[in-house]
Length: 289
Image 1: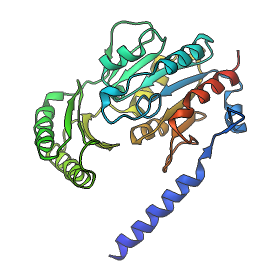
Image 2: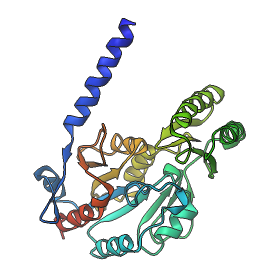
Image 3: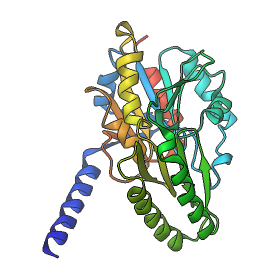
């Protein structure tokens, strides 16, 4: 009991420390006022932005299929990209078909399913970054999740190429939260020692190939794709636990930004998703020509 109590105190201290260490970016006269430290990071190099989709580029929706890119956001994003000061890679848990449909012709690179698949800007062929055997865990994970989908009203299973997601945003809150915890534990036990990671997100439990990780993708992209003579300052932006993997994996000197409240490893935070486009505009204006 004493050890458990002391562990809880340590968690509270860590939570408070993470809240205190970040710098909030505020709006002034309708524009986002970038902190001096952030301006200094952008003074010499143009930004390479690793950008989440749900909850970051677009608001969270009750039904995943409703989270289409708004026309106004598309227009503003296109305007920022036309200045050729920023490079954007959208790194999302979404499937490649959805990302292609939403972001086509915008001149951004895409990483689908948390980095399992990659499409370079201007290319037409996706590259798989997963090399493990999906069939060693996929069928069992599907069966377990389908059982929970039958058990919990309003929940459903989304099947991707390298992941399975159990969504419960529209389910009875208390009951679904309890079942989500049980599902997480059952998946971890049943799929132990297999090349799969089990994660919990915002009203979703996901089983995905072990290589499908935003942090792993960020390291690969910066080390292997970005040319030495095109080195930029990396700016990672996201809103949930999967984005913390990016924050912890970008090179020293990078800029990390969390959307919304809560503890984070990010250096900076924006109060809400609605401030993102203003922030991207400010980044572009602060970058060297």
